[in-house]
Length: 122
Image (tube, rainbow, N blue to C red; front, side, top):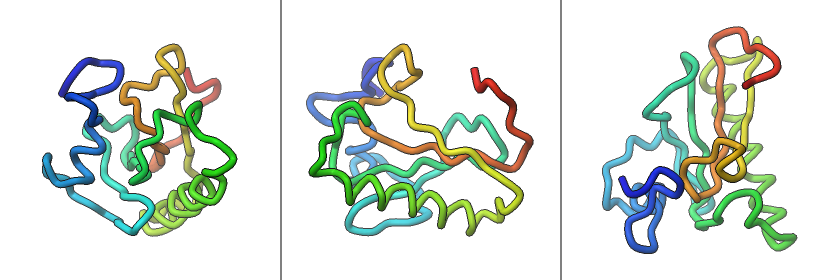
């Protein structure tokens, strides 16, 4: 899977390899801008990852040019939460950098639900 921070093999992240079909992925959603998969290490009964096809390093790598894409990711996350019957509440998380808990250097939005969320998150 590559090193912990980055999940890279060569220049491709783990998520790029899944998107490109090098590693099998169970896609719950796929469009020209993003894919949605289940997290392999779930932290809640529902734990999905919304991943842009464009390999942004993270939110810290996004620019004004990515404004439409970022909105698409959040709306897709909401749609997937609705499809997962999380109407009583859910959490969206974007980790940024090593100290922020980011393990793969490819932007992704966590959709967590199916249990009571606590605060602070950790």
